[in-house]
Amino acid sequence: MTKSALSASKSAISGRFINMTIGAVLGATLLIAPLCAMAEPAHAHHAMRHSAESVEERITHLHAELKIKDDQEADWRTVAQVMRDNEAAMRKMAADNTALPGHPVTAVDDLRTYERFSQAHVNGLKSLIGAFETLYNTMPDAQKANADNVFKKFGRHAHRTVS
Image (cartoon, rainbow, N blue to C red; front, side, top):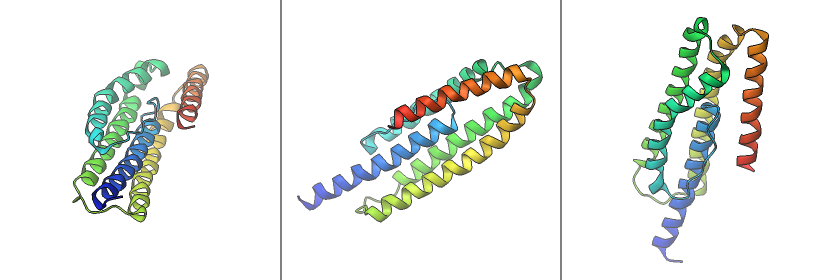
């Protein structure tokens, strides 16, 4: 294998790690998005542009699924803003990562990149859980049961997608 082919192969592997992580973070953080993994870094810009377009659709869909009431709108706006902020943070990380010079990517580099995206995922989930818990605590029992079912559907879908 030539040096340029090896470098291209390493870049593609790095792109897959980054994009799998972005997909996982967006899927979990945005609650209802399917996880996606792009094979080539060239598609990352398109995937991120699509995710930004759909974050508002996901927020709108989840608002309807959870049957948010007028008196819950303030708490819902906080949840929605955390979702937007998490998506923006992941977008920035992806942009910063692709802005690095095209040096050979090692397995250790891939693992460190995966660690950074995973940590951002955890941090985003912590913020989302805090905001969502506040909203959830305002829900009557029937609405909580509905929310539980919405999240159960998401969990089964996410596990199927990853497997």
